[in-house]
Length: 115
Picture (cartoon, rainbow, N blue to C red):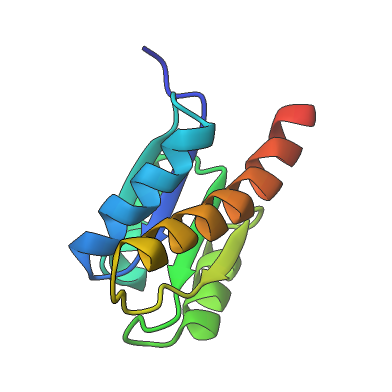
């Protein structure tokens, strides 16, 4: 099955990857979600693949805004957004975060599909 969309999550927390994957695949079942723990790993992935959307978690080591600047300057045309994943206290909060992530991704990937 071909990947219809590719999303890159820049975040060292593996649990966040699972959360984002769940959210993305609810709306885009054929999407692939890749992970990078930092800007250097993200640049490696961006050098060999095209991503429709890069999500940078707010607590990455170098800071989300700085990481986005590095990525978008190094790979022009990259669409990158800051993503804040709050520490979870229970199932209701997880569902709320999944819904918020899905909405953010749908906003950007939905625009991409219309082009």
